[in-house]
Image 1: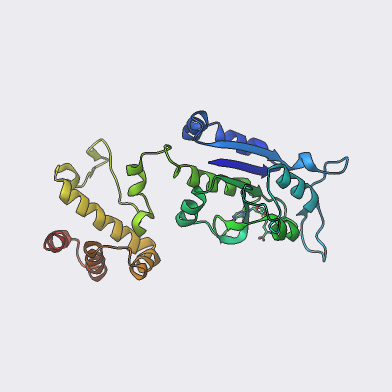
Image 2 (image 1 turned 180 degrees about the vertical axis):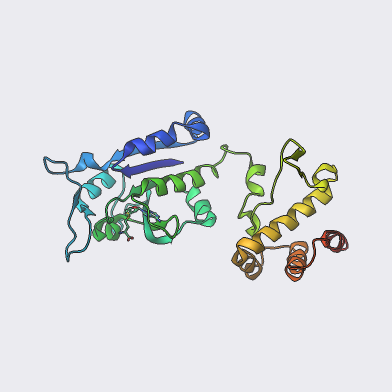
Length: 270
Ligand code: SAM
């Protein structure tokens, strides 16, 4: 995967690419990156990159000209140009974009090259969006002071899905995989501050552990993100055992906690 980040703050982006698993992925050439300092393309002697918006309103806007030159230096072509096959997919980070989800991360991870445009001030001149931007993407329903942290969210969520970065087993049961959140987990010691690791995890009975973990995924998802369950049911992504377990967990919400054996038996009887 090739990332180009267009920013007024190259140092924020550089520090991310130089640390931890990402640094190793860069070293192994699984990830390539380029940082374009938008200010290098400013046209006046003060290196200005912003000006007041037409029509008034609070704050400043990023100027179109430095942004267009910076994008073209990164190989981006205008959307109406015919030969766009080898241009990066241009993503502008903005709170008014479509939500960034695991699904969109998986889609972007398929791209050979992404250019991430980081805004600042009140955002950017609309003509840059009209001319160059393929996707306007928001990382959440809140307003950040600039786009670098949002760009790093997109980079982080996409590069780890690329071949060779992580083991595929690590990805298979993560939150959002298969439409559910992850199950809770414990590590040593067995008892910590009076709290024990659940018995089933110490049993060595792998089938029971898998079923228990699935139940916990469903419980957690129903409790904090019920819309994920409804979406998964509507899209038909759950198998029969998972659907049965969902129904049972739903109907037992509020019951006492002694239902686990019944649920496991019901699944075993399928
Ligand atoms: N005036 C803009 C609005 O109300 O939508 C907010 C501009 S914000 C202060 C400056 C920059 O931060 C934006 O241009 C964008 O690049 C970035 N940004 C802020 N919140 C974001 C979010 N939730 N997702 C993605 N980018 C965001």
